Length: 274
Length: 281
Image 1 (cartoon, helix red, strand yellow):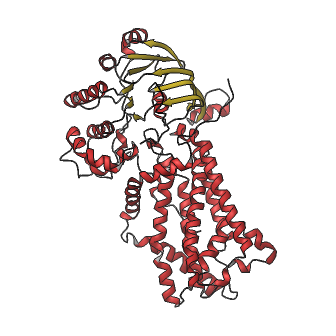
Image 2 (cartoon, each protein chain N blue to C red):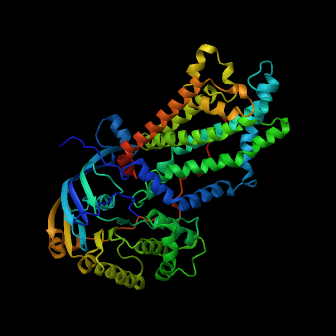
Image 3 (cartoon, rainbow over the protein chains, first blue to last red):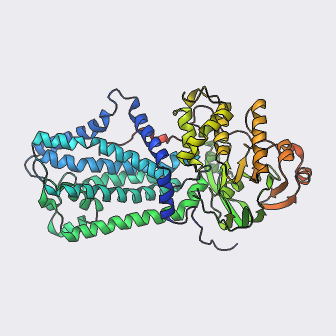
């Protein structure tokens, strides 16, 4: 038996796959719309849940860390707004990655007949979660009104952070989705890692509180840089030094490349499992 | 519409060169010993890679209608259809195709019960590589051919499996591909509808479309196919006329595939991950 030769992915390059996903965008949005309505259909409060869940979480966290343990300042003031601005992207990140574990498994039955790129279902899950995130954005407005704090010109970084996070999540989703087809336990590992990442990322606290020596280590977490970018609109002092952004950014880039390469290498096995 | 790699300069419609493929199979655990007995009792399965095809080489000229027949029930032809269409990647070797080869597998379950019939046509069309404009353009043809005019805006939940099969079939046929790879769904439907199917398929063949036909009964293959390949132990063991192939394998052996379209319960476009498991941590 000859050694395994390089297998050609169905779509010669990520670029081709991108083009064909773009061509099928109408179906993509039809499916995303249905996914969303499906998710909220049975609930009495419907779409409000996209807002109520993160709201409940941010209020709880605010209560615990500001009222109960209020002795030490954890980050920018007002703390409630500080928390909300980071919790929403965090929510998006964690729900996106954990549902990506089922992206290929859940839609595996369409793979044998579909001439769309295999990545299609990952993109679909990601976009659904992105819409969830966008729906929850009014919460930030609400927090701003409650605390009567408004952003400065730096708010532009918010959109930059959004784009960077979207790209990072695409790469990570591909990685997580491909591996969990082959290793069923992987979904559980991802859940544990996400839980740990919640405390390791500066969601509840500001990166400025991390001791000087550990700060560049903390910046290895790409979310550290992204969350800082989300916040600088309100708290310019949240800016991580340029060095920190460079580290966060390059780790994010590595994640994306690793995701794409892993997917391309595993694509033939994912298709076999379908 | 070239989403899967095609090579328009190719002389043949399809070329398999030294294709080797292994597929993971679930296999009941065997063996004695206490722990193995327990595992057997628990119906535990293990995943084993089994070789499906070894160094398979053949070509299909444009306009041919090739019957693919397994020598024995274990000689599967589904993977061959998927390889041809490009929804499966061989372990070694190359599969080259001149045009897009459209896979039509027995998947009435592709119809999503929670969408309306119109939306379903849309989604299936997209899966098969049609653009939204093309689907709109062909919507009338699809509706009249499949006889959907009354059901068009109702939810597919209400459609009997029979109708679902027709929807999938008609949309695939509307794609006007130059080549089709079918597994048990060349002709679908009840008797009256089968005639519509026959007319359409034969018209396509006259226009020069290439067909790979697997999982059909002997009658269909005799009527439609111009050539037959018999696959045994992962090799082509006979390449000749349909008659020769049927003599080798035995008419009774060649049966129409059972439809894997389970009823309403399965909603294939749905992820089972509808329930949001995210917890506040």
